[in-house]
Image: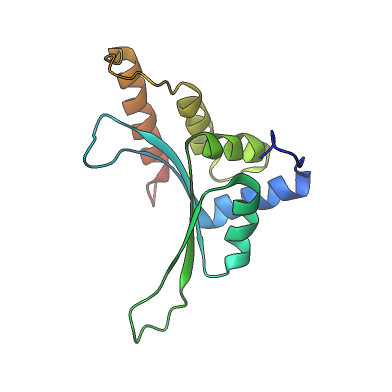
Length: 146
């Protein structure tokens, strides 16, 4: 990450941006069991592990391999999921280089920068409304065929 030991180059940031634009997804979503809790995610899926490992080594995240059913002619795919603060840092780093998903990234950064831990204190209605709006806007931007 940018705040870590190694400073990232422009080429590394631009390459990660291209991976997100071409093979990735920026989402704000909530678990089905907790409909009032939202999280920011950046996901990249590819059949070549080198692409997702490149991003993971620089911004963290959880990497898993998904195998296709027996008899399928598809290659296994690698799935990288980066969440919360790491996702926000990734989006901040690549924002100048994004072409297709710049608006989703802007919403993601704005969403994550306003995240707070409320503990047992009820969250203000304005905070909940903003989370719903950010989730809805990113969802609309991610729709296919728009």
